[in-house]
Image 1: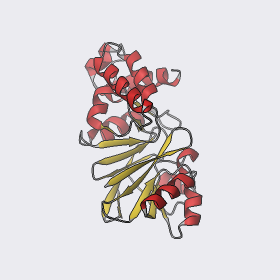
Image 2: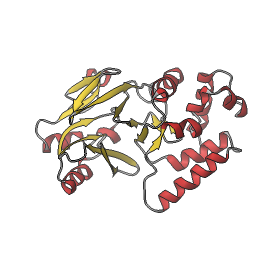
Image 3: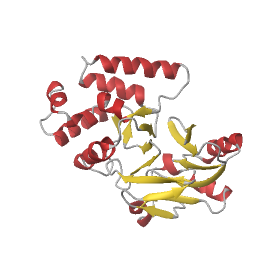
Image 4: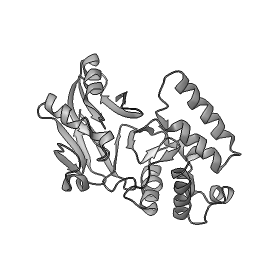
Length: 254
């Protein structure tokens, strides 16, 4: 599966996906229609579907414009959002673990509430599109969910996927997330190396995505809350859910 990063708005990413050799594509989280249409035109691709990770406008603001331009476009999101009509022009609803057949392959939807209650991560061919649930070295704010829900989503659902799964998140927050992670475990040399690499990529004008789940298990303080040794080293509460809540509270004001 070919993945093309489409910068949108200030720091959002949409993703254009198509199988090698195919002229048909899907897009994940189109913040605005213009950059997506430009990317389609440059590559001679026809858009078949939109995959939404959640209902926030900076992830679905481009959906109506794409639907006006591409007749019959299918728009997928979680059933929670469809029932509340939170994703504009949504045509299809998915549940946790359900697969959607597109472009000759299956896209699996993982329900990952925490940032929002309708949040979905989309997985296909070893690529994982996490929206605002899992960032590189971070996670989204708990606007609707609970620490327990976010812990399950991050650790028990996404964290259980193979380590070489590539993570494509919804925003370019990596540098700030790594700077925060170093305040949690400042003695960790791996975080400094990751920060220097991220800074170098940004100086080149390149995105920091993708990462891997294996890398996130070693540098993301929210995923690391599952590790008792990490909690002790970081002087966090003994319980993993309580530790995640404490780290999220600190990140909210960082």
